[in-house]
Structure formats: structure tokens, C-alpha cells
Length: 182
Image (cartoon, rainbow, N blue to C red; front, side, top):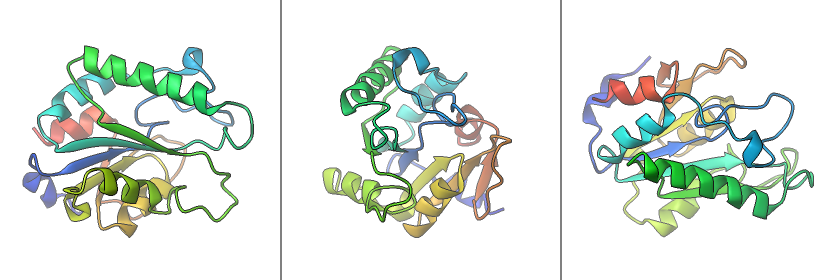
């Protein structure tokens, strides 16, 4: 796959990250409902530390239909995200903002990946985001499709669960990808 672009990445690029399966352990068939269920994957905090000096912005974009299904609330989700941001900061890394879609997967949603809404909201907050100088890192086809629709480079984190097509680069973890940029 196309990987020459990794040499062009500099501080003007934006890193978009999926959450479940990239940042934290994905619970197959269920949802991360509260802080007790939230398990940050090995190497993620180091990745956020290393990425801090490499990217203009680090944005998390995550589908969270557990809210629509009433298995969790917006408050529960914000509590989990606050813990994530605090842990990143304590590791001298950062996440600039987290965008999420609470919509069901069967509705026509502007924000639910692969629809571009969360990225467009991020660009509205941070007008210097250039999608052609952005990378989407995810572990599902909807993550890769989201990035491709916007002209981003895409990195598939191989989760051994779902086969994905159309990505630019494959990595075993977020840390493995970030180290490619070093």
C-alpha cells in the first residue's frame, strides 16, 4: 500500500483517531459504558506523547450508539473522555478534542462515521485543519471510509477481527504507527 506520504508528515498535519480498538480495548458485542470498562491499550499513552510534537491537532472521532440505546448517557461518556484526556496529559501527551456521534448505526446520520460530520465539526473549531494533510487511524471499515471520503491518509490498526480494505498503511498498534513517523 501507499506509504511514501509518511515522510511528508510534519507539525501542520492533523491526526484523527478512532477510540474503541485504537485507544482503548474494544468490547466485542457490547459498549464501554463507564470508567471501569475503559482499558487503555498498551503503548497508547506513549503514542500520544510522541504524537504531541508531530501534529498540529490530535482529534478523537468515535461512534457511540450506546447512548441512543440507553445503555449509557452523555455524562457517562464525558466522564470516560475526561479520564482519557487526563491520562494523556499526565503522560505529557495530548488530545485536543473528542467528537462523538450518539446516533444509531441504522439511521442516516451526518455525524456517524463514515459520514464526515465529526471531521467537519473539528475543522470548524480548528480552521487550519487541512484534510489532505490529515491521517485517520482506525480499526474498522467505517473509519477507513470516513478518512478516504475527506481525502485523508488512512491507517488501519489490524485488530484480527474485521478485514478492512482501501487503507494506505497497516499497523499492529497506534504506537507501531507513530514510531513509523519518527
